[in-house]
Length: 369
Ligand SMILES: Cc1cc2nc3c(=O)[nH]c(=O)nc-3n(C[C@H](O)[C@H](O)[C@H](O)COP(=O)(O)OP(=O)(O)OC[C@H]3O[C@@H](n4cnc5c(N)ncnc54)[C@H](O)[C@@H]3O)c2cc1C
Image (cartoon, rainbow, N blue to C red; front, side, top):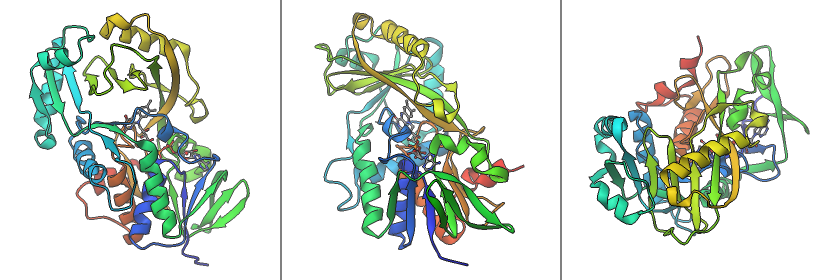
């Protein structure tokens, strides 16, 4: 029996953006299901909030640039706050990694990244260790207000009648005689014609999907924030050291530091910190910011970045079951790229496909042998 309901599993950035763009397309009877009591507490609330449009993969690079336009000029009424603080981003490389940075720039000539002399970066950020000889700068990138973005998407969807059900855990799909009937939750069955899987790292929980599981893998990454530091200017850009897997930016009067660790985990372990990984980040920080080696770490945490084998997003219909859609595998770019992701997902869900040149590259069908 058709009830025309769409259930979206997960109220992180993927689910929220999908709901927003479905509502914008006039789609009603939307239900956003979230297992936590608050939306956005998993990867969406645990990331570095960096808008970095220079992504080496040219497809993701274009998606990031398109999405940044939404954040820099959001629709009227989306948020009362600016969504991006345009601090700029420096990509910097030294030694053998210069060629890597050069190739990123060559492969993405439309990105708007501008080469600068390394002395410009060192004059602004004198605490940075020497050795970085190639530097590019993108002025419009910077730090996103993730909370304002998430709330903008959820509020926009709910204004059009979408229902946000918090504390409701999805337990599996109900399929009878090859037809999708809806979802089982800890509080009972919800009938739906269409189900959108946007549950972040839990997309890897194969038992939830039975024969429709896809090869997602969550990787844990840590972030740490120093105590406030006299040496830090809060207007500094993000600094991303290419090839060395280390980045930092101002945060709460100190610095947010990331050693780009990536350890495969089960989703339940995605937010559990590993002291050994935190020590590795501290060692990288001591190398690149030697004057701060003895600085106190005020807080640290971990979160998941979830990938499929080709590292591209998974957006679109599952050809094995009519009515099943995926918006997952957003890796390390899910906040930056959410406007494009939500738009493409909404197009798939409402029209059954997309003519966008990226649609086939991102479609779940590519993962089904
Ligand atoms: C350390 C770190 C740094 C990062 N830095 C950046 C960055 O600087 N810029 C950037 O663009 N991206 C960054 N990312 C990536 C970004 O955070 C993710 O791509 C994005 O948050 C993924 O969003 P999501 O909605 O898919 O997942 P999530 O935010 O995890 O949302 C999934 C939601 O589904 C819910 N859920 C799970 N299972 C169920 C269930 N059974 N029933 C109901 N609900 C369920 C979860 O509770 C969660 O709320 C970073 C990630 C990490 C970990």
